[in-house]
Image (cartoon, rainbow, N blue to C red):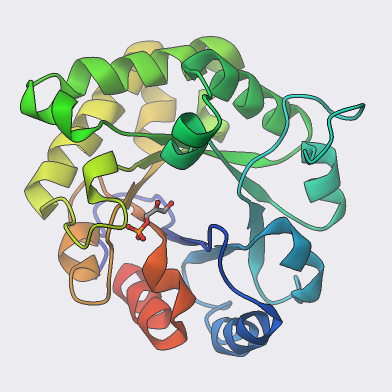
Length: 250
Ligand code: 13P
């Protein structure tokens, strides 16, 4: 059960990454439609080619990335404006797989967050450290640098419009989630760090945890004071498991 000590609306976002097919779209559509009336935002971020196959009346949709440009000669890229036109409300920016596979810098991620806001999308900004940084005891410095770039990029008046996802890289796709205490520790740091720029925004901003979230560990993670839901990868491809995770956040 999600913590109830604040007025932040819980959120669970499923990041399908480069997985799924039309059959999964239909299965998820049926399952999630029933959750729509609950006190929870459930967002599906499928590969962009499947966005139009969803019925956006009954669920929230997000993209997995956007270009920093709105249009032009950028073969293979997709703009915030295009996602918006297809009914998306959210877009993931700065996922660690984009940062590593496509060499995306903190500064580029910040530009993408700004462009998303300009086009009326809520960016889900991913931050999180590799194992070497955790082992060196430098998690807070590393995450602070990722946050600072975004705070600078979007401007302090816009911080409240963001969703942050803390995804430690060592926990992604490994089956080895952060413990609830490890997650809370970093989420609390993130909220305190944002408070330095805008105290009101910090108390209202949603901070999701991502990295091997499943039906068994979601409840304990989401019960932490500064964990407002999850960004779910592998488990978002299994309907029953994903629904159970959503229930844990509700
Ligand atoms: P897993 O849930 O598969 O570990 O992936 C997490 C993630 O990267 C979500 O964006």
